[in-house]
Image 1: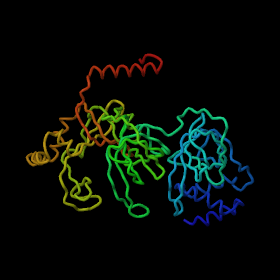
Image 2: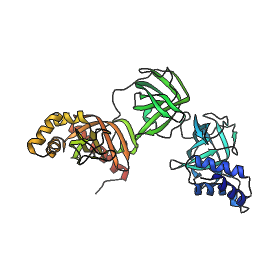
Image 3: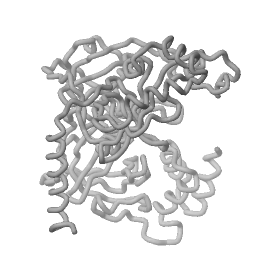
Length: 431
């Protein structure tokens, strides 16, 4: 893309400095803003060349939209995170987090250090607005001004980055967590500067477990260590939140309590999170889906194959395996529980060789899935595992799958209480 020609055209139309226009365009393009949208944003910033008032308007946080050009916002800094990104082929250090007033909160990215800290009340002038993950975000650049206010603003949001693991969401920046390193692995990856050594594993506290990556491995991050991590960011990895440590993350000893149990939530609550690394739901198996029982996998990539054809490797000599895909319903929503080989053996009550023998005797591979369906459908199970949600639905990759032992009378009382709450919320009896 020839950014220069776009910048020259805009600068000529708007009667402003070409380099300033180019910088604005590149800032927007760096965050994958389409070129036409980026050009419209630059036009709005400079009053569209029509002699209008291009000065930024002062707005509440809740009024900031992606249609705005530049804005002035007064709010309290909730979090400040620091990390390095690749920008125009060079390393750039940015600061990012959230600012809030009493109407809402909004993310920001600052391309230089404006000197504010969590808890400061600031007036941010001439901040650009761009879309980030579907939401407006303030973009603080060279033309932005930041003034510290003497009186702190009261806001209905926690100041500072301290969070339990279960509270973390993809997109969080400047977070602080205390956790134990449950699992740790040293890996070599092909990074942007060639081969790079990283650490990856699992963190745990008394609320949840999450995967993590340390991009600048340090000795304090060791298996079994209880640590406090200041200034981490969270991104989505395989459908769940993942904690990321950068060169700016500080590591200190901590005392951490870890639960052996996964958080138990309703299926609806789990699905609404968009993904959970370790979660437990309880519900009835409505159906054992097609693709269960005896299946065949590609020996190269492990994907399911049909008629000896792999989507990635073409004609292959497939390997037999066992799997269950069961639809679990708890009355709030449904999720597909996926059981791997070992769990499938347990619910089937036999080995892979037993399943192959049964299929040969019946001259039908479907008998294995039919047998599993008779054992599961209509019964209530506790499922623990990693939940991912995408356009095709919610899948729970099970690590545990056992028949629920909760008391039916207790369930009935809980359901009646829930119905009573719904009726109360509606303001009276339902007829």
